[in-house]
Image 1: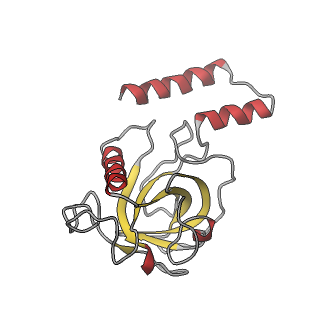
Image 2: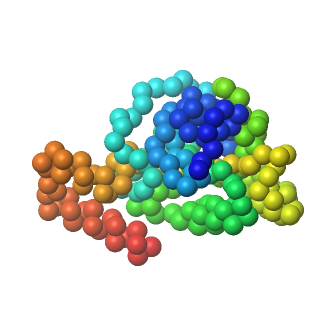
Image 3: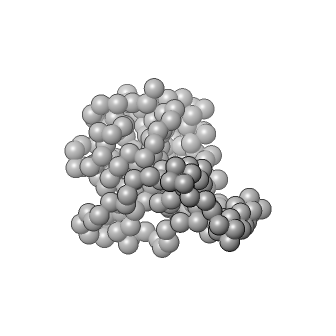
Length: 207
């Protein structure tokens, strides 16, 4: 089960925390979803020092691409998605790093963009504080590039590190979420909208 509780634990209690990813600082706004040892949060980029504004309405999970993708890069006080995985094994570490490296190579308007990735040590996380970084995954870092020590142990200083991926936020959520919401309200897609959506999916798959 995913970690819970204070001291860097994951779950709803992380809402309100500020987390550092290399040169980016984000404020955790809302828990969007969870599964396995991972939690996905709606966060706001605070790197420019701006205050917290209005929160987008609930409904989407922001975990997959859709026609409602946001635009622009970091440093615009925008909403993003932060996936945090508690690393419990070397295999899990390798999977998390492969996911980040794959996302870093993808650049397509119909695929969610990844902005940054790193590890953090949960014991350095305090209320309103910034999580300590172990290493930048894509940048190499110490310990053979994994940020977990030369032996590949999943423990850092006696605690489990957390792998972070910062991604673009898609307010509409999954395509299935959109379909379910429309079905619940008795609405249907018109043909032009279906053609556009299908074209975007085909473009992403062919890429």
